[in-house]
Length: 116
Image (cartoon, rainbow, N blue to C red; front, side, top):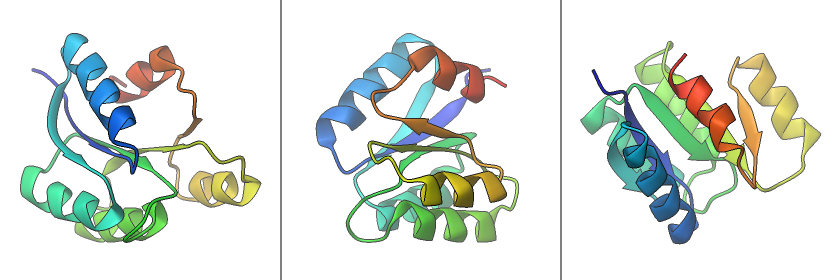
């Protein structure tokens, strides 16, 4: 069975390219969004296996969305992505047991986390 994913990033090109690549790798992208509020809405509606989410976005940061998603499902599988280089972000995510991947992405690493 295909894994289902939502892709959330404020950069539309990143969302489009990421979604196309995942679909090529037989991963079903069930939703795309560009801010944290949309991430929460899509998670409630689609109940994906995995959430790929940027940490720095308008209308609700990645952390805000992660907190709300984990309130809905404490075991939600989330992969955080960011172009930023903040050790504070990494430290917070580590405490939440959420893998963090820096842009530019290592696609093989992301695929291994999704399929784990």
